Amino acid sequence: SNGILMEKFNKHTFINDLKEEIEESIKDGYLESADDIHEYITDSIDNQCIYYSTCYEIMQDLHLFQWDEPSTTITQVAYYGLYEWTFMNIDVDEFDLTLVENG
Image (cartoon, rainbow, N blue to C red; front, top):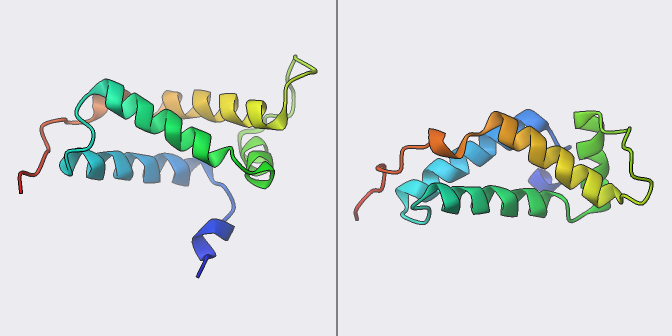
């Protein structure tokens, strides 16, 4: 079922899921540095901003209805708002990079 795709965007769920994914990816040996983690996070933000419907939900959830640049697109507003929110709530240095499970 596509139930998960239909869930409304939630900023807290996004952060919690992202932290879990990062921890799993460190354990699996895919993320080996703060740079890797930063890239993973920005890719995840990118992926959230593909669809207009999700961008609109992000804007609603983060209250992003006032912005200064008239030429700014809904995608840009959602991306930068989510970027700011994410890096206020996740520190790339908070993760223990020694958690790699050798197997």
